[in-house]
Amino acid sequence: MSLSSESIRTLEEEGLRFVRDLIRIDSVNTGDPETVGDGEARAARYIQDRLEEVGYDVTYVESRPGRGSVIARLQGSDPGRGALVAHAHVDVVPVDGQEWTHPPFGAEIHDGLLYGRGAVDMKDFAGTLVAVARAFKREGIVPQRDVIFAFFADEESGGTWGARWLVEHRPELFAGATEAISEVGGFSVPLGGRRAYLVATAEKGIVWARVRARGRAGHGSRPTADNAVVRVAQAVVALAAHRFPVERTSALDAVLRAADVADVHEITDETIDEIVAGLGLVAPLISATLRETVSPTVLAAGSKTNIIPALAEATLDVRVLPGHEDTYRSEVEAIVGEGVEFEWGDLIAPISSPDDAALVETIGEAIRAEDPEGIVVPYLLPASTDNKHLARLGIRGYGFVPLRVPDDFDVFGEFHAADERVPVDALAFCARVTWSILATA
Image (cartoon, rainbow, N blue to C red; front, side, top):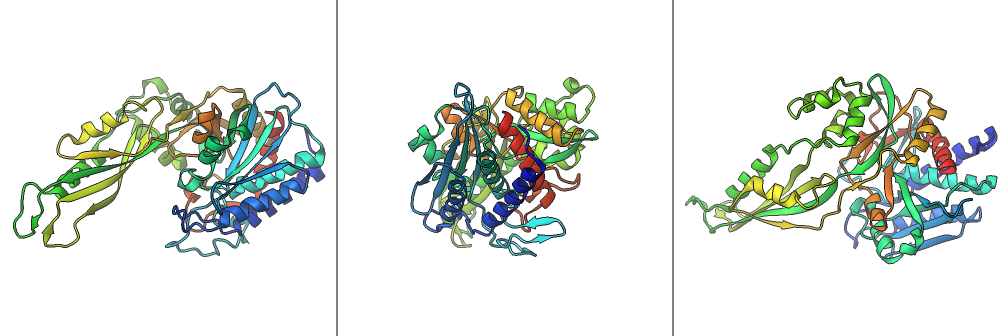
């Protein structure tokens, strides 16, 4: 299903225009439902208008005032095949406290780079999907399987009012869907002397916890062994110092093979960190996938310097590998031992999809058509996306937003950063490859 040169040019031009228009809509998600505002709704309505212009039957949903999401389905030629969900989120993280050299909602282009909040996370893909959806209608092309275009609110705060809400309250919108494609992956990285495009076939789970110690309150001039602050501090130090064992996932081995690491199966827990550290630009990302992690993030205790408080606590960001859903609590608590108590939040469970699925091969073919030297490499995402919520409906998720960038351009480093930016020519590449994937998947 090829496009004419004129149709490709229109696809690329619309994609860039829609990405810029979406960036200019301030849809910051503060994490507080009372202060979010209506930016997500305005972004979703903009998308709805662009899709309805070319004849889509669009479902607009507000889970609560201002928290808008949009769903549209394109019928495929083979109704017996499972539908593919192509999704993006319309919210972005705040810019407060960051020093931007270009307006974060200006969508300005300088030296071939598009600047703005959401340039990679992830209004780039939202705008691209709108352009691709319009191209299908404009060209009268029917894909092989149903494609469900979805644009979610609230991804940046866990999807409570977006993908999660829709899965729980409007599951019929995803009827028949078996796979999904979205963030985080698809950007090119140098690996083993080749240009690799990472596809997230799995994601770590996430759970937040509190570790709390109770002691006897007293005057600061009379130190006591029963000091809650000290015990929480000791727990935090123990957690930060602990190194969980390495988990040799198939995705990790795929990255090591692509990096041309000799004797992959002979790598040990003692040597793996040094080997991964030598992977260059992608090293920090892959390093975070080697094992389970616990990051202490907030400490709270006391209100006055000369008072020993009776209570101290720390919050923990725990990332759980697939297969450890039933053991992570005992593993973490065993590191600290007695003297503190844990309060666990709800686990957003890890997910894992087949590395060898036909969709992964389709992605590879689409990349090779644009970049014959490029390779697609499965990896484990240490972060979290809306694919986790869709997984509750039995939908297998993959992270792939195709961006060909210079070898020294760190796409993952642009997420949530000041002066978030993306090369304009990478957006054109994204439009062409995404079209190919959705047309032939």
